[in-house]
Length: 301
Image 1 (cartoon, helix red, strand yellow):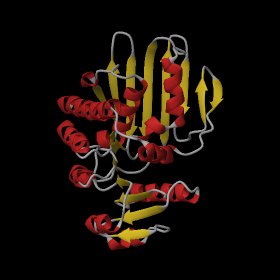
Image 2: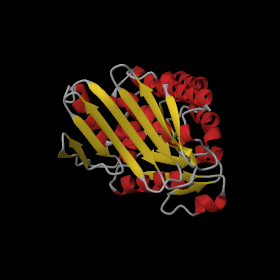
Image 3: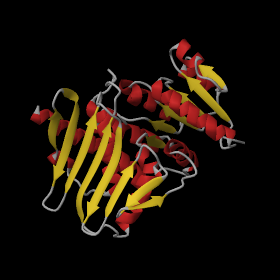
């Protein structure tokens, strides 16, 4: 019997999730794709779903769900996440994973209590380029870290329901923590605003040995998704807008992933036998690091 996966919240990003799930269904990896949104016109516009609901309670009554993907407005993530976990359902919560470390801890504790699994929507951990970069770093191919620069800038205006840190920088915070676990002290972040755009900033974490930068912005002139890691013995460059190649010391490495990061994220959630201590810790640590950056930013405004 195949998996049934539901997407709750079918706006811009939720509809991307549905499309990704439908590809997995075509490959025989899923049995049913369910869409749910409070707005009837929104959910009815979703093409290809096996079922559509305007009430998550009704959806839970009529469906046997293996995974719920929560892509609703940010301020509903904790309450809805807690409701689904209370039913013992596995949940993938899009960022932000709770509005604070205390909310993140409550979600993780509820998952433990109900023997359910809960996952964060920071999908760069499932990007083939980030995974290969981590492999190179762990085997010592770049030597000692000198600098790490992450950039995610978009021409889209900032959605009214989010902020610069939750909407864009959190991926960089989690991505750097994935590549260099417990290496960066995010409470030391310095913030530089981009002239003429209060929705763009550079976050800098400095140490005696290295510098890490996270460049983010809404409403900029061009899209940018890049990672550059420089060490004493090597340099990694990645355009993570694609997931086919990575450049190491000037040479292009073919990655050839079988699926997109979004699909790999879902499959990892579906096939995880149980939540590990490391998975819980990484989710909570990112929530703490995001809060540290927000506090650092507030002190400098």
